[in-house]
Length: 53
Image (cartoon, rainbow, N blue to C red; front, side, top):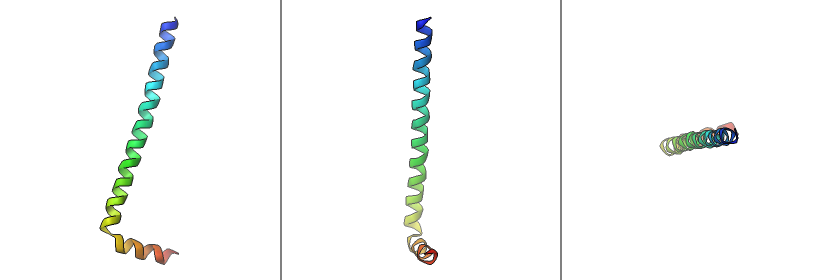
């Protein structure tokens, strides 16, 4: 019975680590997209930010 419990714990830990990894991956992708688009329309975005304030 102990082996089954231990195996389940290992799977739960792996699942949590996998979820954290995926979340970090998606956040990084969004950040790089934002960085690329910022380069592309840098002047316009700077102008928009100044208008909002």
